[in-house]
Image 1 (spheres, one colour):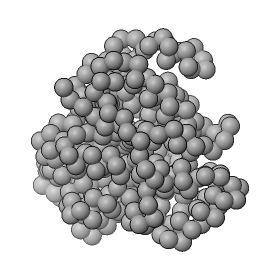
Image 2 (cartoon, one colour):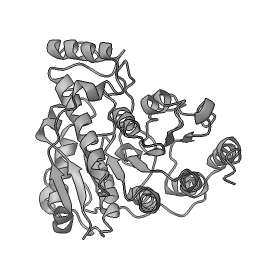
Image 3 (cartoon, one colour):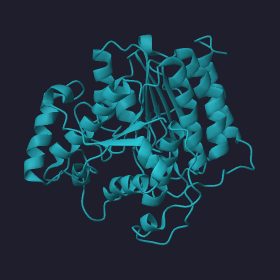
Image 4 (spheres, one colour):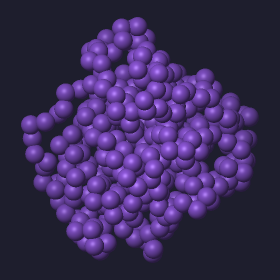
Length: 367
């Protein structure tokens, strides 16, 4: 029977920007309760409590001045860690360090060839010297630097959060050791306003930063088309030694602050694709990170779909009634959506794909 490591701590719940903020910490707690309420998944999932990342590990990616700024802001518990949308709160340094520690421990355990999932990971907006988009520390950036310090030379970072992972993309824009593939809602319509297809990296990393912006209301057919035409050929060519997947649930059609229309089918399809690549090239060294998602019910279902796919487990039709009773409002009882089929990819996504073939695939000799 396959197994997966899952990082979770009650300390994750202290990463809380306060009442009314869209990113609610209970989404993490509810996911663990959902996981543990399905017997076969509970049996295969080895939940561990992470430790906070040390200063030495945080400075693999972040500047010492920024760490000091966060510490000072944490002690005051007022103000913002960026210009407008990431408030400081008491304990924010420790809470963010714990999230990073969870991702790093997942990386260490995945090195054994066992997949791992940090439900509290995927803070892809933070830069080395500043917070951004609810992200205080960038656990992805720290993890990539950690892997590079261990002489990994072909790391794949795949991001399907609705928001472009700018803090990862631009911090490694000239780094040829990281293939970064980011499928997101176009920056013309959504924060952070970046991640266009002509942004492909520079110098030795040119062609290794693959941005795939989607128009609002893009769904499963566009996502599957992109996987087939761009993602699969590029990752097969790259042959990654280690894979990190950010599976933000805010690309789902039910998210209240984004505009994509993916179903759980797309999360299954993306995970299947990367799982096959991991088994072929990286000895199953793959880490999943939770990322965004502002509808708790749908985000939990997306994460569960990805985790079950890694384990080759078919989910039951209905969510457990006891778990459903935790939610604030009435929702349908199904764990999986119907695949959103019945239409062809539109002309804009086809144009984006053709542009990427010219910019990335053809220069690399992939097509």
